[in-house]
Length: 220
Image 1: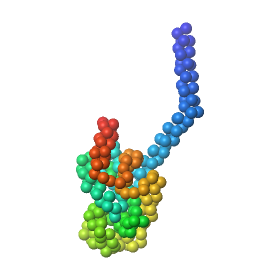
Image 2: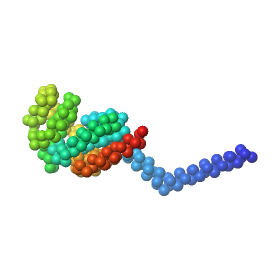
Image 3: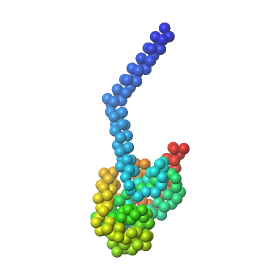
Image 4: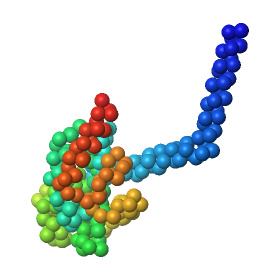
């Protein structure tokens, strides 16, 4: 008797669950949730995978991807904040740089991006990056070579890389990815795959910190 009653209860629960998930599927709720999950995972993969310049551990709980333009004044304004943020969360944040040169309004942005990638080839991206932002009024080929010499690059290798446009397609790929994710200006920041900020003003600093602290709390 007891076993029979237990079997009936199990059967009722089974029927209830089958009916519940059937209703979810036919209503589209489960499908929508699954598709959104796939889309989000794909977006995170696109943003975080690859060989872009980055700072911070790959297993950090927070990954911030920034689409930037070396001639953009708002990107320039964001640099002190980015440095402060990375210093504040050295083990918890991974910062990834992606190129998004706004060539329609910044005539030297593409050339600067290509030069910086040539420096990245020699593991000197961030030194080159800092010099470009510090001297946005000098973004021309002759100055790129001055930076290359000053930071100790192999000049022959750098010149060959720059003159042949070795990383032109990679930069175009970054820009295409940005456009597919509704990036329209620089800097644009994504946190763990989610669009967080387009443009930069100092008033968003605390919003970044709050988001980082919240994600960190979920991983404790």
